[in-house]
Length: 197
Image 1 (cartoon, rainbow, N blue to C red):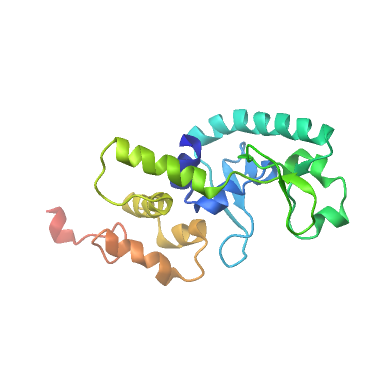
Image 2 (tube, rainbow, N blue to C red):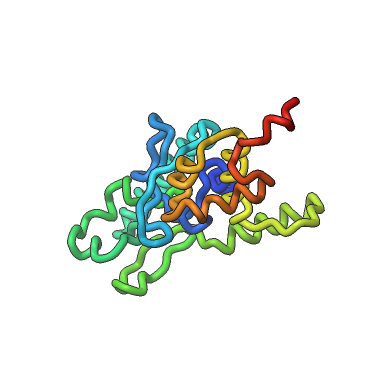
């Protein structure tokens, strides 16, 4: 649960994007990850925290172990679109395995085959809700709060708005500009020279 939350904040991911990450989407050497079929059905690249990259190696190995065990039973990860029909053995390739696989298998509603999907969003939402209650935070905290914090903190530290727009996958910079209002500044990182005297 913690690594998933760290990825939401460290890479600016939506919870669904994080849970759908597959082994092939992670590039530890380049400290980047690829979000496939994000909002608006677009792919995008974003940054990967070195702290998360170190932890991800163990999760990738565990996911490959689960896939190997599933493969021995003729089961694999659920595959996108018609990939299962086009490449019947794709479920054996490690790249297609989810990094955060479900603890159980299920029937793929599109193909009728037994497969292993990714962890359900409700698992993370419940874990976050419990953590928030345990530390008695009175403000509303959701999985999406971490994506907002990612953008706000990048802008606070002086990142340019176009870079943040690209990392978040926003079509229009006006969507990203909302975060500058949260900062109380019209342009991120820009303050009046009078305030610096």
